[in-house]
Length: 396
Ligand code: ADP
Ligand code: MG
Image (cartoon, rainbow, N blue to C red; front, top):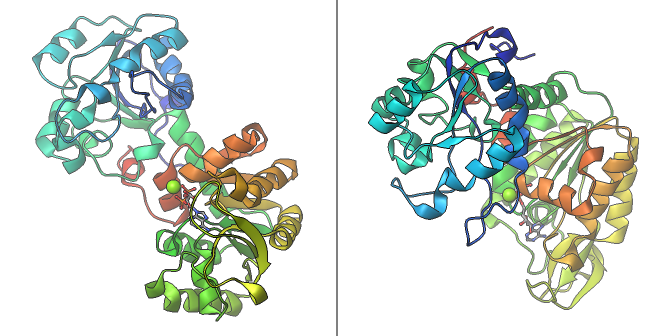
């Protein structure tokens, strides 16, 4: 599937390994990690390199610093957590390049671990500056990328560095993501159903177009459904409609019809008087859509129709919630998709930051075939794009 060098193929003994991980964890106002999922997801790769005698230099970004050091984005907050999972000390570096880091690396022994400071404390990271990439590469013999969540960005630590540091291999997490997402596109089981939702059509055009080539049924929900309903001439009240995408929605509807893809849109709605968690709300159909209200979730008849299609499926790709699931009153549509997928025998692949959060909220993450750790990256992968962080790795 992945024609790239894997960390399984490498002898790490005595080698200095620059490993790009995704430690972009959420922190509270006291710089404490509130969710360490990403650290845990990196552990198999980290353990593999350490147990095989590599000298591991870990690099990541955290948050969106403005190109210089900012205490609230320091990776020092992650070092204790990492050290605990690893069961050995992890040395925190004061920077990711420079003489101090060089000295620390020179003193490493086999199996030692250093965590570099946030690569985005240098503007050269997101600019993919060759000088910065070269400085990152300088202290190592082998490059490993395990950060699927940033693989769609050609940054210095994900792409640029590979021009100066080879071999460049995929870590286990990156490999797993590509395996599940790649197989879904290359060898789908049928009926293949895609569930696409979220706020805006404009975010999801490319993924709809790409999946339209593969699926039997396309289920559309969330805010973006209302641009499609408008394209069909239905009333949508004050729901989120992208006026400048109505024409495109018409084209997509036509394309689905031409290809024989069943495209499902909401037939009833939970509408609210305003956008707020405790807004007055009620159920309505297209026929009695109140002009001053906005749809914040799919209605019960729609849920029943969508569940029917999902129960029939042998493979489902899901990206984007069915409603404003962050508000309990408008979470039912999204929760029901999560639960139906959890109970189904279909291969279920979930991508997208908010969709994954919804699966967690429903408490059914262990029942999905694959939950992608990369929001934007999984979307671009499903769009059929080549991710620069993957393309840059050494061919197997
Ligand atoms: P993902 O992160 O899974 O790709 P998106 O970011 O595209 O999903 O969309 C998620 C957002 O869409 C959520 O914040 C949700 O509240 C919003 N949303 C869903 N349905 C509606 C709706 N009917 N009106 C407004 N916003 C919506
Ligand atoms: Mg999102």
